[in-house]
Amino acid sequence: MTRSRSLAVGLGVLGVVFLIIAALYAVGVLQILTSSNSGPHYKHAVLFAVLAVASFVAANFARPKTA
Amino acid sequence: MGLLQGASELFPVSSLGHAVIVPSILHWDFKQSDPSFVPFLVLLHLGTATALLILYRDQWVLIIRGFFTAAIRGQIKTDPERLSMLLLVGTIPAAVLGVFLESRIKSLFASPYVAAGFLIVNGLLMLGFEVVRRRSEHGATRSEQESHFGEAERISFVAAAIVGACQAFAFLPGISRSGITIGGGLVAGLRHQEAARFSFLLATPVILGAGLIEMPELLHAGIPLGEYLAAAILSGIAAYASARFLLRYFRSGRLDPYGWYCIAAGLGALALLHFGL
Image 1 (cartoon, helix red, strand yellow):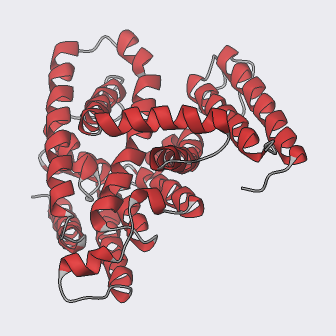
Image 2 (cartoon, one colour):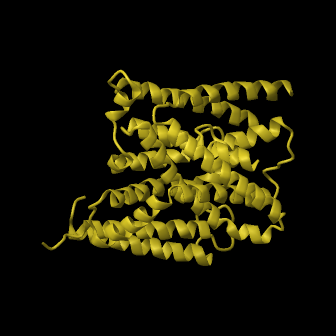
Image 3 (tube, one colour):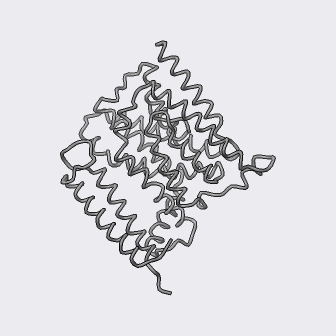
Protein backbone atom coordinates (compact mmCIF):
# COMPACT_ATOMS: atom_id res chain seq x y z
CA MET A 1 0.00 0.00 0.00
CA THR A 2 1.20 3.52 -0.82
CA ARG A 3 2.44 5.23 2.34
CA SER A 4 1.72 8.93 2.61
CA ARG A 5 0.91 11.20 5.54
CA SER A 6 -1.80 13.08 3.61
CA LEU A 7 -3.48 9.81 2.55
CA ALA A 8 -3.40 8.61 6.16
CA VAL A 9 -4.96 11.87 7.37
CA GLY A 10 -7.63 11.69 4.65
CA LEU A 11 -8.55 8.12 5.61
CA GLY A 12 -8.63 9.12 9.29
CA VAL A 13 -11.02 11.99 8.52
CA LEU A 14 -13.15 9.61 6.45
CA GLY A 15 -13.29 7.27 9.44
CA VAL A 16 -14.53 10.10 11.68
CA VAL A 17 -17.21 11.00 9.09
CA PHE A 18 -18.33 7.35 8.96
CA LEU A 19 -18.51 7.28 12.78
CA ILE A 20 -20.71 10.37 12.82
CA ILE A 21 -23.00 8.88 10.15
CA ALA A 22 -23.19 5.63 12.18
CA ALA A 23 -24.20 7.59 15.28
CA LEU A 24 -26.85 9.54 13.33
CA TYR A 25 -28.36 6.32 11.96
CA ALA A 26 -28.27 4.74 15.44
CA VAL A 27 -30.23 7.56 17.07
CA GLY A 28 -32.67 7.80 14.15
CA VAL A 29 -31.72 11.28 12.95
CA LEU A 30 -30.53 10.07 9.53
CA GLN A 31 -33.18 8.42 7.33
CA ILE A 32 -31.45 8.45 3.93
CA LEU A 33 -31.61 5.20 1.91
CA THR A 34 -33.64 3.35 4.54
CA SER A 35 -36.75 1.23 4.10
CA SER A 36 -38.77 3.13 6.75
CA ASN A 37 -38.71 6.83 7.49
CA SER A 38 -38.76 6.72 11.28
CA GLY A 39 -36.78 5.27 14.16
CA PRO A 40 -33.17 4.12 14.47
CA HIS A 41 -31.56 2.03 11.73
CA TYR A 42 -29.12 -0.28 13.48
CA LYS A 43 -28.17 -2.19 10.32
CA HIS A 44 -27.03 1.04 8.66
CA ALA A 45 -25.32 2.17 11.89
CA VAL A 46 -23.35 -1.08 12.17
CA LEU A 47 -22.36 -0.86 8.49
CA PHE A 48 -20.96 2.66 8.90
CA ALA A 49 -19.22 1.68 12.15
CA VAL A 50 -17.51 -1.14 10.24
CA LEU A 51 -16.58 1.29 7.45
CA ALA A 52 -15.13 3.63 10.11
CA VAL A 53 -13.01 0.81 11.54
CA ALA A 54 -11.84 -0.13 8.03
CA SER A 55 -10.92 3.51 7.34
CA PHE A 56 -8.90 3.79 10.56
CA VAL A 57 -7.12 0.52 9.78
CA ALA A 58 -6.35 1.73 6.24
CA ALA A 59 -5.13 5.05 7.67
CA ASN A 60 -2.71 3.20 9.93
CA PHE A 61 -1.47 1.16 6.96
CA ALA A 62 -0.98 4.36 4.92
CA ARG A 63 0.90 6.16 7.70
CA PRO A 64 4.65 6.46 6.96
CA LYS A 65 6.57 4.25 9.39
CA THR A 66 9.70 5.40 11.17
CA ALA A 67 12.67 3.08 10.65
CA MET B 1 -37.06 -26.09 6.31
CA GLY B 2 -34.13 -25.93 8.74
CA LEU B 3 -32.42 -28.88 7.08
CA LEU B 4 -33.11 -27.44 3.63
CA GLN B 5 -31.72 -24.01 4.54
CA GLY B 6 -28.66 -25.36 6.33
CA ALA B 7 -27.74 -27.75 3.53
CA SER B 8 -28.45 -25.44 0.62
CA GLU B 9 -26.78 -22.36 2.19
CA LEU B 10 -23.29 -23.77 1.65
CA PHE B 11 -23.87 -25.97 -1.40
CA PRO B 12 -23.53 -23.88 -4.57
CA VAL B 13 -27.24 -24.30 -5.35
CA SER B 14 -28.87 -21.19 -3.77
CA SER B 15 -30.62 -21.55 -0.42
CA LEU B 16 -32.86 -18.58 -1.15
CA GLY B 17 -33.92 -20.09 -4.46
CA HIS B 18 -34.77 -23.39 -2.75
CA ALA B 19 -36.52 -21.55 0.11
CA VAL B 20 -38.75 -19.83 -2.44
CA ILE B 21 -39.32 -22.80 -4.79
CA VAL B 22 -39.61 -25.86 -2.49
CA PRO B 23 -42.37 -24.56 -0.15
CA SER B 24 -44.28 -23.39 -3.20
CA ILE B 25 -44.06 -26.77 -4.97
CA LEU B 26 -44.78 -28.79 -1.81
CA HIS B 27 -47.57 -26.39 -0.79
CA TRP B 28 -45.94 -25.69 2.59
CA ASP B 29 -47.65 -22.92 4.50
CA PHE B 30 -44.69 -20.50 4.52
CA LYS B 31 -45.56 -16.92 3.71
CA GLN B 32 -42.62 -14.55 3.29
CA SER B 33 -44.93 -11.64 4.21
CA ASP B 34 -45.71 -13.25 7.59
CA PRO B 35 -44.18 -11.22 10.50
CA SER B 36 -42.65 -14.39 11.95
CA PHE B 37 -40.88 -15.34 8.70
CA VAL B 38 -37.94 -12.93 9.13
CA PRO B 39 -37.17 -14.07 12.71
CA PHE B 40 -37.39 -17.66 11.47
CA LEU B 41 -34.84 -17.00 8.71
CA VAL B 42 -32.66 -15.09 11.18
CA LEU B 43 -32.48 -18.11 13.48
CA LEU B 44 -31.74 -20.46 10.58
CA HIS B 45 -28.90 -18.18 9.45
CA LEU B 46 -27.53 -17.99 12.98
CA GLY B 47 -27.53 -21.79 13.03
CA THR B 48 -25.53 -21.85 9.79
CA ALA B 49 -23.10 -19.17 10.98
CA THR B 50 -22.55 -21.01 14.27
CA ALA B 51 -21.75 -24.19 12.35
CA LEU B 52 -19.17 -22.34 10.25
CA LEU B 53 -17.65 -20.76 13.35
CA ILE B 54 -17.33 -24.18 14.99
CA LEU B 55 -15.85 -25.69 11.82
CA TYR B 56 -13.22 -22.96 11.50
CA ARG B 57 -12.84 -22.12 15.20
CA ASP B 58 -9.03 -22.44 15.20
CA GLN B 59 -8.68 -20.36 12.04
CA TRP B 60 -11.04 -17.67 13.36
CA VAL B 61 -8.92 -17.31 16.51
CA LEU B 62 -5.85 -16.76 14.30
CA ILE B 63 -7.75 -14.45 11.93
CA ILE B 64 -9.17 -12.24 14.73
CA ARG B 65 -5.80 -12.11 16.48
CA GLY B 66 -4.12 -11.40 13.14
CA PHE B 67 -6.57 -8.61 12.37
CA PHE B 68 -5.85 -6.71 15.58
CA THR B 69 -2.10 -7.30 15.34
CA ALA B 70 -1.89 -6.07 11.73
CA ALA B 71 -4.32 -3.19 12.31
CA ILE B 72 -2.34 -1.86 15.26
CA ARG B 73 1.05 -2.46 13.62
CA GLY B 74 -0.09 -1.02 10.27
CA GLN B 75 1.67 -3.80 8.44
CA ILE B 76 0.93 -7.36 7.34
CA LYS B 77 3.57 -9.94 8.24
CA THR B 78 1.85 -13.34 8.51
CA ASP B 79 -0.70 -15.36 6.51
CA PRO B 80 -3.49 -15.07 9.13
CA GLU B 81 -2.95 -11.29 9.19
CA ARG B 82 -3.23 -11.14 5.40
CA LEU B 83 -6.31 -13.41 5.43
CA SER B 84 -8.02 -11.21 8.04
CA MET B 85 -7.51 -8.12 5.87
CA LEU B 86 -8.67 -10.00 2.75
CA LEU B 87 -11.85 -10.98 4.57
CA LEU B 88 -12.41 -7.38 5.68
CA VAL B 89 -11.91 -6.14 2.10
CA GLY B 90 -14.21 -8.87 0.78
CA THR B 91 -16.91 -8.30 3.38
CA ILE B 92 -17.29 -4.52 2.97
CA PRO B 93 -18.74 -4.47 -0.57
CA ALA B 94 -21.15 -7.28 0.31
CA ALA B 95 -22.22 -5.48 3.49
CA VAL B 96 -22.73 -2.13 1.71
CA LEU B 97 -24.74 -3.68 -1.11
CA GLY B 98 -26.63 -5.88 1.37
CA VAL B 99 -27.73 -3.03 3.62
CA PHE B 100 -28.83 -0.76 0.78
CA LEU B 101 -30.13 -3.20 -1.81
CA GLU B 102 -31.08 -6.55 -0.25
CA SER B 103 -34.70 -5.87 0.75
CA ARG B 104 -35.44 -4.02 -2.51
CA ILE B 105 -34.01 -6.80 -4.69
CA LYS B 106 -35.62 -9.61 -2.69
CA SER B 107 -39.06 -7.99 -2.82
CA LEU B 108 -38.71 -7.45 -6.58
CA PHE B 109 -37.78 -11.04 -7.38
CA ALA B 110 -39.48 -13.16 -4.66
CA SER B 111 -41.45 -15.30 -7.09
CA PRO B 112 -40.97 -19.05 -7.55
CA TYR B 113 -40.89 -18.58 -11.35
CA VAL B 114 -38.13 -15.98 -11.12
CA ALA B 115 -36.24 -18.14 -8.59
CA ALA B 116 -36.43 -21.11 -10.95
CA GLY B 117 -35.15 -18.93 -13.81
CA PHE B 118 -32.22 -17.64 -11.77
CA LEU B 119 -31.47 -21.20 -10.64
CA ILE B 120 -30.88 -22.05 -14.30
CA VAL B 121 -28.68 -18.94 -14.63
CA ASN B 122 -26.78 -20.08 -11.52
CA GLY B 123 -26.17 -23.47 -13.12
CA LEU B 124 -24.85 -21.85 -16.29
CA LEU B 125 -22.56 -19.64 -14.18
CA MET B 126 -21.12 -22.69 -12.36
CA LEU B 127 -20.42 -24.39 -15.69
CA GLY B 128 -18.96 -21.13 -17.05
CA PHE B 129 -16.58 -20.78 -14.09
CA GLU B 130 -15.28 -24.29 -14.74
CA VAL B 131 -14.86 -23.62 -18.48
CA VAL B 132 -12.72 -20.54 -17.66
CA ARG B 133 -10.80 -22.54 -15.07
CA ARG B 134 -10.04 -25.47 -17.38
CA ARG B 135 -8.34 -23.10 -19.85
CA SER B 136 -5.62 -22.31 -17.30
CA GLU B 137 -5.12 -25.88 -16.03
CA HIS B 138 -2.15 -28.09 -16.85
CA GLY B 139 -1.40 -31.71 -15.97
CA ALA B 140 -3.07 -35.07 -16.40
CA THR B 141 -4.39 -35.82 -12.92
CA ARG B 142 -6.63 -33.65 -10.80
CA SER B 143 -3.98 -33.23 -8.11
CA GLU B 144 -1.47 -32.02 -10.74
CA GLN B 145 -4.05 -29.61 -12.14
CA GLU B 146 -4.87 -28.21 -8.70
CA SER B 147 -1.24 -27.95 -7.62
CA HIS B 148 -0.66 -24.97 -9.94
CA PHE B 149 -3.19 -22.86 -8.06
CA GLY B 150 -2.86 -21.02 -4.77
CA GLU B 151 -4.21 -20.82 -1.24
CA ALA B 152 -6.79 -18.33 0.00
CA GLU B 153 -4.11 -16.20 1.66
CA ARG B 154 -2.49 -15.55 -1.75
CA ILE B 155 -5.52 -13.98 -3.45
CA SER B 156 -5.05 -10.28 -4.33
CA PHE B 157 -6.94 -7.58 -2.44
CA VAL B 158 -8.69 -6.45 -5.64
CA ALA B 159 -9.81 -10.01 -6.33
CA ALA B 160 -11.04 -10.36 -2.71
CA ALA B 161 -13.10 -7.17 -3.11
CA ILE B 162 -14.58 -8.38 -6.41
CA VAL B 163 -15.40 -11.84 -5.01
CA GLY B 164 -16.96 -10.14 -1.97
CA ALA B 165 -19.04 -7.81 -4.14
CA CYS B 166 -20.24 -10.80 -6.17
CA GLN B 167 -22.03 -11.99 -3.01
CA ALA B 168 -24.59 -9.27 -3.73
CA PHE B 169 -25.83 -11.32 -6.71
CA ALA B 170 -26.98 -13.91 -4.17
CA PHE B 171 -29.79 -11.53 -3.17
CA LEU B 172 -31.39 -12.74 -6.38
CA PRO B 173 -33.29 -15.92 -5.43
CA GLY B 174 -31.67 -18.75 -7.38
CA ILE B 175 -28.15 -17.31 -7.44
CA SER B 176 -25.91 -19.05 -4.90
CA ARG B 177 -23.68 -17.01 -2.60
CA SER B 178 -21.24 -19.88 -2.11
CA GLY B 179 -21.37 -20.78 -5.80
CA ILE B 180 -20.53 -17.31 -7.01
CA THR B 181 -17.78 -16.81 -4.43
CA ILE B 182 -16.24 -20.23 -5.06
CA GLY B 183 -16.41 -19.52 -8.81
CA GLY B 184 -14.86 -16.09 -8.24
CA GLY B 185 -12.11 -17.70 -6.20
CA LEU B 186 -11.40 -20.19 -9.00
CA VAL B 187 -11.12 -17.40 -11.57
CA ALA B 188 -8.84 -15.51 -9.15
CA GLY B 189 -6.48 -18.49 -9.14
CA LEU B 190 -7.39 -20.46 -6.03
CA ARG B 191 -7.50 -24.25 -5.74
CA HIS B 192 -11.07 -25.59 -5.56
CA GLN B 193 -10.75 -26.51 -1.88
CA GLU B 194 -9.21 -23.13 -1.04
CA ALA B 195 -11.91 -21.30 -3.01
CA ALA B 196 -14.50 -23.15 -0.90
CA ARG B 197 -12.63 -22.29 2.32
CA PHE B 198 -12.40 -18.62 1.33
CA SER B 199 -16.09 -18.64 0.42
CA PHE B 200 -17.11 -20.13 3.79
CA LEU B 201 -14.86 -17.75 5.74
CA LEU B 202 -16.21 -14.81 3.73
CA ALA B 203 -19.81 -15.87 4.36
CA THR B 204 -19.47 -16.18 8.14
CA PRO B 205 -19.30 -12.48 9.17
CA VAL B 206 -22.03 -11.51 6.68
CA ILE B 207 -24.44 -14.26 7.77
CA LEU B 208 -23.61 -13.83 11.46
CA GLY B 209 -23.79 -10.02 11.31
CA ALA B 210 -27.10 -10.02 9.45
CA GLY B 211 -28.48 -12.52 11.95
CA LEU B 212 -27.32 -10.66 15.06
CA ILE B 213 -28.64 -7.31 13.79
CA GLU B 214 -32.09 -8.85 13.30
CA MET B 215 -32.04 -10.47 16.77
CA PRO B 216 -34.34 -7.81 18.34
CA GLU B 217 -37.06 -9.05 15.93
CA LEU B 218 -37.06 -12.32 17.88
CA LEU B 219 -38.07 -10.53 21.07
CA HIS B 220 -40.98 -8.66 19.52
CA ALA B 221 -42.50 -11.11 17.11
CA GLY B 222 -44.26 -13.47 19.56
CA ILE B 223 -42.93 -16.50 17.72
CA PRO B 224 -42.93 -20.21 18.67
CA LEU B 225 -39.32 -19.96 19.85
CA GLY B 226 -38.92 -23.66 20.73
CA GLU B 227 -39.85 -24.85 17.22
CA TYR B 228 -37.74 -22.17 15.60
CA LEU B 229 -34.73 -23.03 17.79
CA ALA B 230 -35.10 -26.69 16.83
CA ALA B 231 -35.10 -25.66 13.15
CA ALA B 232 -32.00 -23.49 13.75
CA ILE B 233 -30.16 -26.41 15.37
CA LEU B 234 -31.09 -28.66 12.43
CA SER B 235 -29.93 -25.92 10.08
CA GLY B 236 -26.60 -25.74 11.91
CA ILE B 237 -26.12 -29.51 11.82
CA ALA B 238 -26.93 -29.62 8.10
CA ALA B 239 -24.59 -26.69 7.41
CA TYR B 240 -21.73 -28.31 9.36
CA ALA B 241 -22.16 -31.62 7.53
CA SER B 242 -22.44 -29.80 4.18
CA ALA B 243 -19.27 -27.80 4.76
CA ARG B 244 -17.30 -30.90 5.79
CA PHE B 245 -18.58 -32.76 2.74
CA LEU B 246 -17.83 -29.90 0.35
CA LEU B 247 -14.31 -29.32 1.64
CA ARG B 248 -13.56 -33.00 1.08
CA TYR B 249 -15.36 -33.02 -2.27
CA PHE B 250 -13.43 -30.01 -3.60
CA ARG B 251 -10.06 -31.71 -3.07
CA SER B 252 -10.61 -33.08 -6.57
CA GLY B 253 -14.23 -32.28 -7.43
CA ARG B 254 -15.56 -29.45 -9.56
CA LEU B 255 -18.61 -27.19 -9.71
CA ASP B 256 -20.00 -28.96 -12.81
CA PRO B 257 -22.37 -31.41 -11.03
CA TYR B 258 -23.94 -28.53 -9.09
CA GLY B 259 -24.24 -26.54 -12.30
CA TRP B 260 -26.10 -29.37 -14.02
CA TYR B 261 -28.22 -29.91 -10.88
CA CYS B 262 -29.25 -26.22 -10.85
CA ILE B 263 -30.19 -26.30 -14.53
CA ALA B 264 -32.22 -29.50 -14.07
CA ALA B 265 -33.84 -28.28 -10.83
CA GLY B 266 -34.68 -24.91 -12.38
CA LEU B 267 -36.25 -26.52 -15.47
CA GLY B 268 -38.08 -29.08 -13.32
CA ALA B 269 -39.39 -26.39 -10.98
CA LEU B 270 -40.59 -24.29 -13.94
CA ALA B 271 -42.43 -27.31 -15.32
CA LEU B 272 -43.99 -28.18 -11.94
CA LEU B 273 -45.05 -24.59 -11.33
CA HIS B 274 -46.42 -24.15 -14.85
CA PHE B 275 -48.45 -27.35 -14.87
CA GLY B 276 -49.44 -27.00 -11.20
CA LEU B 277 -48.32 -30.54 -10.28
